[in-house]
Image (tube, helix red, strand yellow):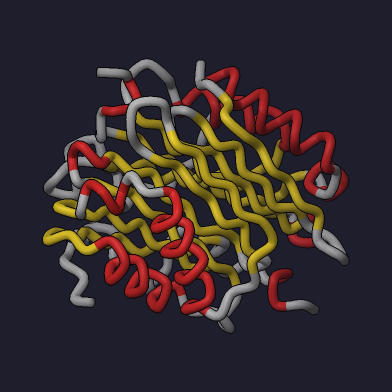
Length: 136
Length: 136
């Protein structure tokens, strides 16, 4: 059974504040950050799509063989909302988050970690009440 | 300021078990469910990408002007992991979830709701420890 047939996944919600507005508004920088994050996790990229919104702000998704990484940026607020969701045990979503934090900077980072694909919905890996700083 | 410039967002992790394997493996059904969910939420679709994996299982992402809806299916386990993330107050992610549940069925649904884009990381809207059944 291939790795991606296992339902167990790890999902990290990473909210970054105080990031550089120019970086958050630059399509090339965000693409590079997202694809670099996939590589850092050891994931296989299936597709990637990025969009710039009319005034400012970007959205991007990298579809992985192991789930996805997404971003929505709000340059005027220095804010970016990342999701790193990986199934299986071979890839490491923490490495992806570290890469993203290095790429966009910011002085406040909130991380919430969850298990997906566990039939009881939550496991001991969850830290549902933890919104703690990620030290890059 | 346009709606999608506000950082406040609602993010729902929806895990469904016991769903019909054929539905979870059918690209057309999943595309229809996902685009229908976006419409049910009142969201604006910017892009959509869907992939079938070699053996079985699908991944799909609908990029919205208001963030995204994603799915990863594991037909052999009757399991699907949905994310519905919407920024702003105009769209309703709960309606999207209701649509998805109706579309794929399943007898166990676990829902976790989170706020994104709040500088303190968590607000009273969060139900971080709640993995409760969604009644469609």
